[in-house]
Amino acid sequence: PGETKREQFGTKLQADLPALGLSELQIQRTPVDLQEGPTDLHALYGAVWAAIRKAIREAGSAAEVVFHCSSGTPAMQFTLILAAQCLD
Figure 1 (tube, rainbow, N blue to C red):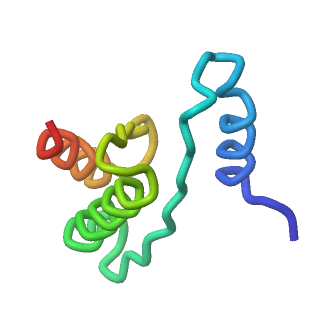
Figure 2 (spheres, helix red, strand yellow):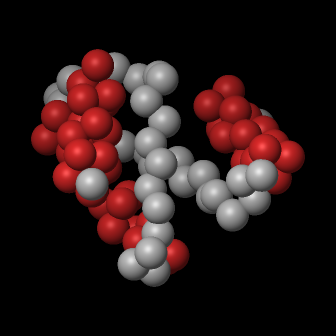
């Protein structure tokens, strides 16, 4: 089967980044298994930090991490904001 709408959005966004002057930015989608449902803060927190560590490992210690918070559950938004504060 083809890409999901979320995958299509990520693919299009990655293709549009150079026109925005952001050709260095790489989008990484990270599927998360939320055993307890969409408010499973423990699973969300672990997945977010695993993705951050992976980005830093791949890009080096000077890596910049950007979070997309406009979609997802309030629990996901909270987790991303918490992670961003910890990186500051």
